[in-house]
Length: 204
Image 1 (tube, rainbow, N blue to C red):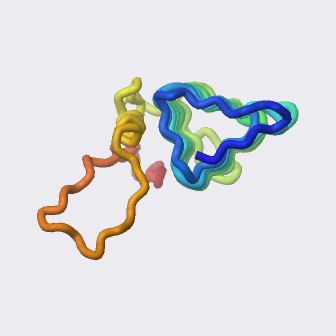
Image 2: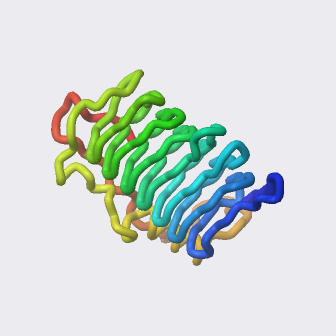
Image 3: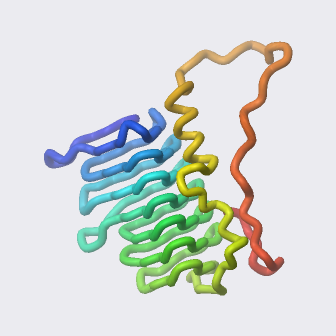
């Protein structure tokens, strides 16, 4: 990873977390245990603190930043999907932020909520637990049922396991000229999120 101190504050990364070498951590950033931070994610703690609590994942191209009045908090077990921005907002536990969505300063998202891909969550949003948010501006569409929060993993989900796998086997290498005979495949990927009605489905 690329880490920068800012005004004497150095990022903190629990040794049980994996942070990709191409991720950037700046200043007052704290990453708890069992987290996965992917390539080209930028976590910048200069105007305030960025906290990623244990067992969370921050995927490729995400930006986590703060304002002078609002820290950026990603609650335990949460996932910030590819290309999303969380700016000075507070996510509860086991929240799923969809790809390319935007969560603005001082928004508060309750535990086990889902933000649909591409949504824009405004600063005045106070979403209770298990909210399904979608749109621009994002609105609470309904409450999620127990069978719709399959990403909740309590430390044993795909990205928690991926963090451990990367700590064990991730290394820089040169590409091969051709696939080797009998080439192995990676282990199965993440579980898709399936919502219960066709009007609510979308990428994450």
